[in-house]
Amino acid sequence: MHPMLNTAVKAARSAGKIIMRHSHELDRLTIETKGRNDFVSQVDHRAEAAIIDVIRRTYPDHAILAEESGRHAGHEFEWIIDPLDGTTNYLHGYPQYAVSVAVYYQGKPYQAVVFDPMRDELFTASRGAGAQLNDRRIRVSVVGHLDGALLATGFPFKSMAYLEPWIETFRVLLPRTSGVRRAGSAALDLAHVASGRLDGFWEFGLKPWDMAAGCLLIEEAGGRVGDFAGLGNYLDSGNLVAGNPRIYQEIQRLIEPCLPAELRC
Ligand code: 2AM
Ligand code: CA
Image (cartoon, rainbow, N blue to C red; front, side, top):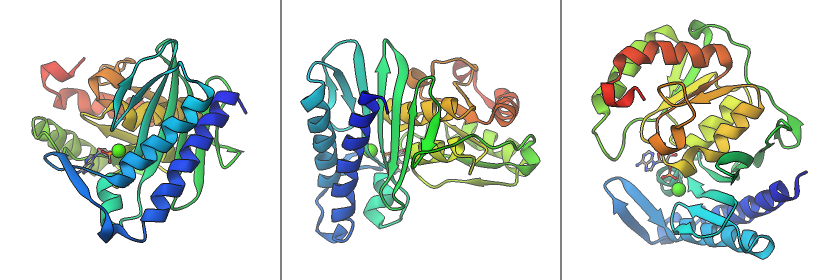
């Protein structure tokens, strides 16, 4: 395993321990509201501190972008961290959440970990070296048409600015698929696309830490990821389409007419 991936795994597992420990005493957590429908607890903060601590011990001069503490300056390598993706689920005891840790090198995805502490599933990828689930190689599904595909998405939850276009995409896609799921953790949805459990995914307005690791998992598992223009600007735009290569293309083709002009890029 690449040494940097090894550190990312250690960091994600130490966050996972904190998350699991507190999952049995949710009623004792202090919950703050970052904004409308946007919650954070001590668990998010502690898990993030644990991740940063592990990284800093080995790579004190790397840059870090973390959901709760923001940007930490550094150079060359950037760690993009979501200590608990699916906080709303977690706070309700709904078992669908994950830790996401990615390393970018010169602006490109380099290492990725998504860890599901509930199921003890560790998804890992290194650029050019494939993707694994608990050390076994994973690949995206071979489903070739939407009518046999299981997709995932995220509903708009904070800003409702793109509720109407999202509903349009849903209206177009839903009747053509086997089903659409909305489980509430984008990082985990992407890991499930990488491992072939889901065939495709789309969402508006994601944050970089929700998708940085999941996108490399998918690419290294033979899938495709892109923004609504089919380009690589998804981390900045927050708009993401992902899937096995055929389903990715189908989703892109079908949602294009649903998008307002400002989203077609
Ligand atoms: P988070 O829990 O790390 O914030 C999916 O829509 C993404 O949006 C998730 O990865 C989740 O990441 C984020 N999100 C934040 N608040 C949410 C909410 N109230 N409902 C659903 N998703 C939310
Ligand atoms: Ca989070």
